[in-house]
Image 1 (cartoon, helix red, strand yellow):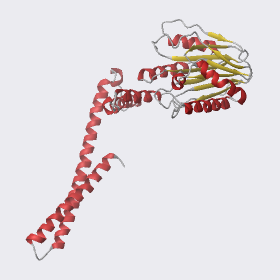
Image 2 (cartoon, helix red, strand yellow):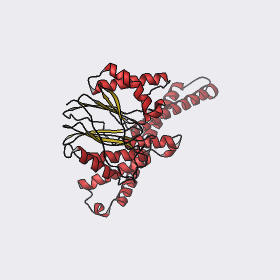
Image 3 (tube, helix red, strand yellow):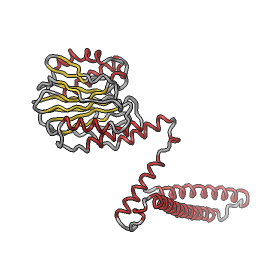
Image 4 (tube, helix red, strand yellow):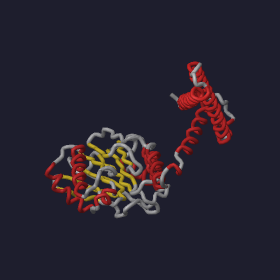
Length: 364
């Protein structure tokens, strides 16, 4: 039931009760003071009920038509605004054409978006920005992991569910696998917009059209077109036929390589985040053998647990070597279980809530 129907019905019920109570009081007064014998009391009650019902219907219908008039007037004003803001070449189109209707619909949607969540509706400016950042993140679809021969991939989380969520993407390259983890330490509208830009850039590369190094070079070139001041990013490409990994890594948290020999740390250039005015040559790591796991985690892990990357490595080395997971999913679950226990030791309510983990296992 629409609001235009609900409100008149509610007003009608309230009006009926109001007028009925009014006539009961009038009848009580008439009976006890002006008509001691109580003559014609029944007819008087019926008049009160019928008149209350009529008044309620009148108010309901009046409010219904008033809301309809108001709604049509608002639509007229919006249509006028839309017509004024549309480009001249669009305004000259036939108003009944499909193209004209699409443009007007888009303008209407944008107008609703601009006015729906004003800053004054939130207790403070941070809540408003967080809400807007989460809305921007919804433009990015849920994470889809394509099947890539030779690689087993698992990620956490799989959706952009909160304002500060990291962007994770896995793409099939012509010669292997390309992946990226990008985010920020604090949520914000600008920060979420940067992730949308990165998503659009990577989507433009297609599926299996370029090699891993070509994708990395194209991404690096595209990122330099904007001033991303505090972007945390790790992008990588692993070829099918070689044990090498090309990557761009600008985070405090290093890449962890788990193998039968233990845990190794793969670091980038040493910069803690992306610097738009710096040159960013591709880094190279070798020794990515079959059965090895590569693990990425967001920088928030360090601040969340109050640990350094070396201390995190110490926590996991014996635990994972004894566990010996056989898939990326088992590795991810093992890491999540260990992080949850570390969080319990530090009295953290939900330590995994705002963390991101990417696990890649080389199968062949």
